Image (tube, rainbow, N blue to C red; front, side, top):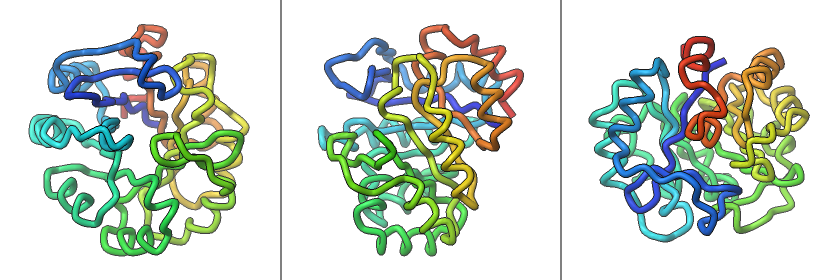
Length: 237
């Protein structure tokens, strides 16, 4: 399993939010490029970049993301407010290895089919989950779509994987929703990436054992709950 540090961008800075709540920001770092370089120096070989402002219609961090992609030595998957085919192409042209799509892909599955077919092996679908159902629009809109049903239905597409975030665990460092992740792995024919609350090496080993392909790590790495070097040594490649 691959450990993937998150670089969440807000107003051009790297931040960490508890539960995705803009009013509950607990980490803010001024230089995204230096943050990315430090993760690469530590031994991580992929980064997860998210434009929080674009995801929540508060503007965007396109310039910061472009600079990261130009500078970074590690392959990056980039998402957050990606809602047009043009933006998907722009990110790939700028150097993103994978593009992460969420809200529009969930709400307009014809569009998901279109971009997956246009960019086989480069699209990751983000399924943000609360009580087993997908939530969209920066976690502001709950849907009636069961995540396991969605993953099962669209596993035939030429995707790079599904990113499942346990929204109810995000930023709390109390452990992720292990049963949720196991059920999604069972339903998917593509790699599954887990996110939300992961806070121990033991938990990462358990995710690895159940077949999770990657773990996106945020708060636990930035606050030192997880030792970045130990994580990179065991799960960096």
